[in-house]
Every structure is written in structure tokens, then in C-alpha cells.
Length: 382
Ligand SMILES: [Zn+2]
Image (cartoon, rainbow, N blue to C red; front, side, top):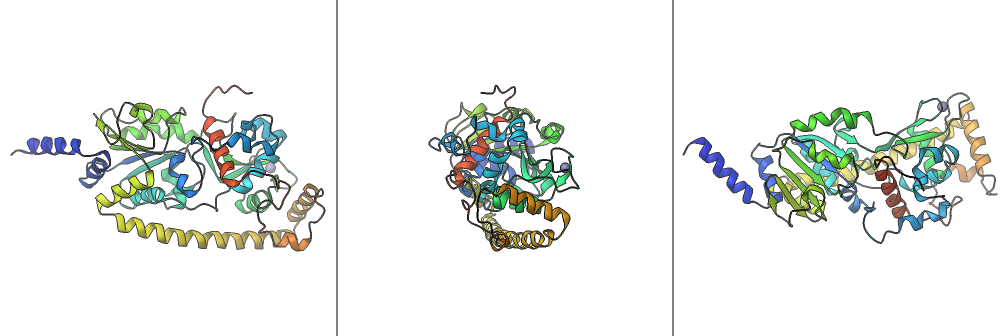
């Protein structure tokens, strides 16, 4: 039997495999060496960050406590410039450092470790891809993230410690600590009224080179992100792993394929494990999850300690004094802010102003929703 026969026989056999095994087979056989991944809120659900499209999350109801003119206002840059408080109230619960990556995130890291990951394109702002070990330069955060922040007045970056100590711990508005700037600091999340990162457009060409596209946990409803499924070559296999059949995959039945498209309707963690098992990577995946969790716990602890130490040291300098004064002014309505309480800055959420604030998970939901909508342009405002 000649090679072409063998190949076509292989191909016919591979085409009959269920979608996940088909994906595994492509990787195992070396046909897929550059795997591109598109990821949405569904891959972070099991981390405790709910998929905002799931029914019954009542996200808009939960924004009521923030007294917003309309729910999306909390992520509207024009609104933020006038009234940044609601955003920071939410940020207190949303900031990374509370959620662990899911098995799906670790599976992405494993694809990288095995040298077959081209890039992850994510709609999520939770930075769990990099927390799991995917290198930063291989994660395209289409809606930005909490990783960095900058001053809206002087454009200078703001340190993570500064953002954490003011905004995240206390839910206070974060201001630029550069000289006398005092401008508003905003995390580099894409708000309404802001464009997507340049890299989102610059790097799309690269998708033409990928040899397998895996779409994970996204409803493929938000443009231009959803359009990325069409940026790959016209014969590149595309696998959707999602609870619902959506977008170009809506015509497919569960666990079926049509042409180059394959659908696995279900949980992304479960799917990631099936693929890993098929590739003989399951043990490695488990080890990554276990070691990763320990490592993160350690990192967060260290960061906590560092922020605390800096906060205490900073209070002696001018910037620190200013920050203290600022905090004092902001909290003057609350009558008891003793120095002891300030030093012990790890306080349970709800200790500050918004005792009646909505619970963290639902806030995340709202954030995801609002951020996802940023892309829909032009967006009429209520
Ligand atoms: Zn500034």
C-alpha cells in the first residue's frame, strides 16, 4: 500500500472519531503542531467565576447596590472618570488572587509545555491562563486584564502594590502617586468607549498558520472576537467544546462532526481531561494542577506580605502620607479607622462602606458581561 493510500485510510478513520479523540489524534500524530485556542467565560466557571450568560445569575439586580444609572456604567470609561467609586467597589471582589485556574487552564499550559500551543486568545480578564503557566506572550487578552493599570491623566503605569493596597483591599478609588498628579488610576481592562488592544488586530494574521483550532467555553456571540473562528485557514479543523452548539457550530449535533468542524457539547474541564488522557498526558495534567495550586498559594502569600510591608514603609514617605490623607478623607464618613485597623489591612469584604454589596461571584458575572459587551460597537447607551 502506497503512502497516499495509507494517509487517506488514516484520514477516513480519523474523521469517524468523536470530536475530542479526533483532536487528540491530530496532536498525537504530529499533524497539529500549532494549536490555536479561543477561550471564553466557560473555562473559568469551575474556578468560581460564573459564566455571565448562564441563566439565573441576576447580575443586573446585584448591581443595584452600586446605585448606577445603568448596569454597564460601572465599566464605562466616561462614567468612570466622573464616578470611579462603583468600579473599585467591585474590584475589591474581582481582583485576581482569589481564584485558582481550572483544569482547562492547566491543559492549555500543558499544550504549551508539549510545544504545540500557538496562542490562547481569551475573552476573560481573570489572568488565569498565565496563572496556570501559559507564558504571557502567548496569551492574547482581547478585553485586557487586571494585570496592569495606568493613570488616566499622566498615562504612567501604576504599581500592582499601589492598586492592591488602595483599591483592592479597601475598595477605595486609586489615584496616581506620581508627584502631584493625583489622576485616576484604571486597570487595563477594556471599558466601554475604549478600543481593543492593538495586538488583537496585529496578531490575527498568525491564525492563518495554525493547524488546529480549539474553541473553549465561549458563546461566540461577541464581535469581533467571535470572528476569529474564520481567521484560520479554510481547511483547518475546528473543534468547539462548549455547553451549547453556537456560531458556525450550531448546525452540528452533540459529539458529531461535519467537514472540518467538530462539536463536543459539555464541560471544558471534562473535555480537557479526555483529550489529555487520550494523549497519555493525564498524569502530567494532574501534577500541573497540584503543583500549580501550591505555587500560587505561595506567590499570593508573598505578594500579600510585600504589599503589607510596602504599605507600612510607604506611609513614612510623601507619597505614602498623601495616600494616607486621601484614604482618611475617603473614609471620614466611617468614624472608626484606627491605625491598628489600617495596619491589619487584610479585612473581610464588607468591612468597608458597602455592607449591602452583592456577593463576589455575581459581581464577577456582571464584570464579564459588561466587558464582553465592550466589543459590540457602536453600543447605544441607555
Ligand atoms: Zn498620573
